[in-house]
Length: 185
Image (cartoon, rainbow, N blue to C red; front, side, top):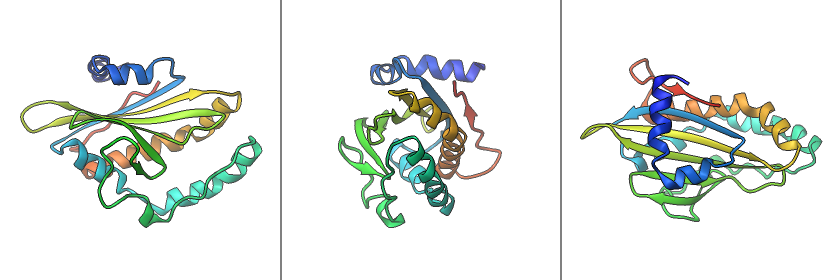
């Protein structure tokens, strides 16, 4: 783990809700980047990333899902992915995530629909850096519940990393002035 990843984990371990979220996780992916946005604005921009590639890969995923014995929900139409007002309260929905916990301009935690093979959550934490900048920590947290969980997740893990990184780039803009540090374990 590099120095920045160590600093990130040290900061995140001071947030009880994040500590509870990652406890006993089988996989924790961490990506972080700095921006001047507030948490809600960062999330809006992050979830605005909706390339056609996602829809194609979701369709290609269907045979794998059937092979492993679970079902795949229909992917909502693009205009249904994000509500007009971004969900910043528990039970709100964006994409296929349901918001679980929020602390204004500090963290946002949401979960995927629970399945028999694994549970997956996404958290975004805003760490103040100075009077204007924040470091945004984006965590993917996975817990396996069945032997099919690690099989499935390890097949799609590259896509998860690719998608999260692209979503983070969409939130801050592209270019070398916005480096991403990925500290997945």
